[in-house]
Length: 318
Image (cartoon, rainbow, N blue to C red):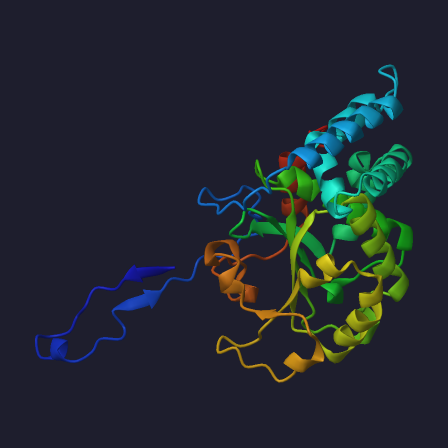
């Protein structure tokens, strides 16, 4: 952010260049996350549905109604509002409009949600995982996608089950932060100061990919990897075979320097990018070169997140 600096130069001075006519304004540090989307969004175009695809959607809708929980069941409303047309489209797109494959995938998710109740995970149970700020939402990219920030170096837990539930909880909350007509999220994984000991295990990575790919298809819009040490490239190479090619291509590595120079761009075949092309400065933390001077505080963040997404949770249309 800039403001005009009154000039004190004489007429003679004005004949010379005045590089200090603008000065950078340093905003006060805040712990309040940006959870409301900006107004100037560049919404992505929704793919047009063909008549053949619409027929498959109708067929899937008819089938889903046959397995829907009875109205007397306590989870009926949650399930019904999950199984929207938008959800059916995402599962169809994820399976390249193969009806049987999409039907199987969706049915597996329905069973999983009935057992796991991901939209009803208890915030008090999850909160210890959020103490250090290793995973939180702050800001939106230019397409209106909530930005999910991850910092592996701040890992504070050895409870594998709760770690996975924290991921699911975050996905559910991210969906509730999405503006109208936005279907997915942006992720920033910041590996600054991370060591091999902070690196998630291969098993945890596979679990994350399994949940994201099989139960939250089409929910990842783009993922940025920042300050990548050598072991990140090694891990990425190991988990790549388990990734859907479309998902893999959504992962971008961020240049450390504004001039685009990077010593290790050959460490991965994935694209190298600049944040400025995807996220406006006012939505990006100063740690990543933006203008938002954010400092994570658990209580401030937790209260804001629950205020926006439901305390303890709320039922929404997916």
